[in-house]
Length: 135
Image 1 (cartoon, one colour):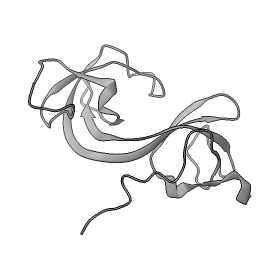
Image 2: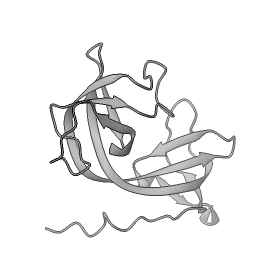
Image 3: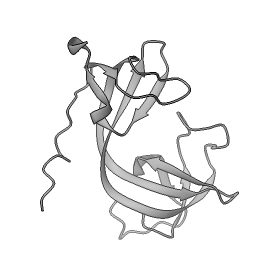
Image 4: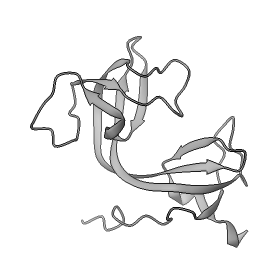
């Protein structure tokens, strides 16, 4: 079965959207936002130094600790990576932190968006967003 959806984001930069879902604490159903950019990149489960698991979008925000020329930009399960960007992550995540990749989903559609209050959010489930002109 071919997934034809992956290469086709439902929204483009500048689109105004409204959330159908609640993402506590900052997003309630009805929260308005603007799409900054749609992206198709890897989705990772990483293990923090304290053993806690955390989801991570965007291979481009992670750098392999030991370069692997065969990875083609996609980090592999079991490798250690350095966090290059901690924007939008909880306080325990720090730029420069070394984490271990424990699961890889190579192609995932997600959106970077900016809410009306100026806060940034990374959104995975575009079925939870609708165009603002429909509200």
